[in-house]
Length: 212
Ligand code: AP5
Ligand code: MG
Image 1 (cartoon, rainbow, N blue to C red):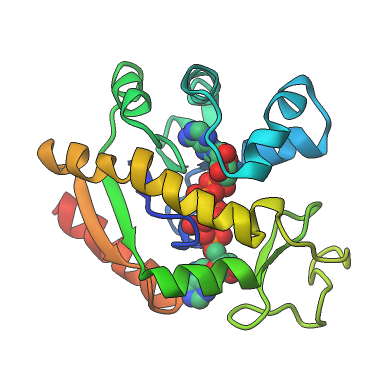
Image 2: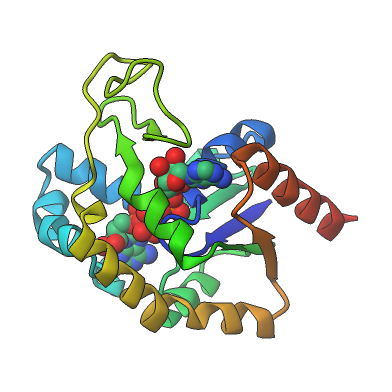
């Protein structure tokens, strides 16, 4: 099953994808994670996109489309995949149609106040890739990753100014995809405001019903 996770920043796309990939045995492909990993490893791509991510703007379509097109050629995608954070613009969605068959687009809905609370409390572990929240999903020891013991950090784009910009960018460039995928019948809304376990269960029910 090939699924897109759509939704504003902080809707829980990455959190639910990390749980769902185990249940469905499919890879979780997050363009944001790919860019952050390139930045951490100081690759040519990383150098190109570092300031774009910090500001909360979008990476150019052409570059992002090529990256996803190549990633979907890898063998682990043959049994399906979760695309998290792609497409994010109409041109990306149009391009995706030329190289992928999507079964569902899951639109995670969350109120703005909750988005701000989630993003301001998010902390990440760079090495393990695990995502925490200081209140909603805290590590066993404050500030330390449960898996690697590394110190947790705040994403550059979770600082207030970048968050506000990301929400504006979402409204302007990504929210139009809801209508795009409603018109072709692929969209399914999932309330993202419940606990991760309940959001995961809603997602699994929605795709089960869609297949039935
Ligand atoms: P990306 O990494 O995709 O960022 P985003 O869309 O802004 O989404 P987030 O990762 O912030 O939110 P999320 O929905 O995954 O929430 P999470 O699960 O972490 O992209 C980053 C940047 O890369 C972009 O700004 C852009 O520059 C570039 N980029 C990426 N894709 C691109 C594309 N296609 N085109 C162009 N540029 C692109 O949860 C957030 C917090 O809430 C966490 O702390 C978590 O613990 C907590 N939480 C989550 N779910 C729950 C829950 N149910 N209950 C309680 N707490 C919860
Ligand atoms: Mg994410």
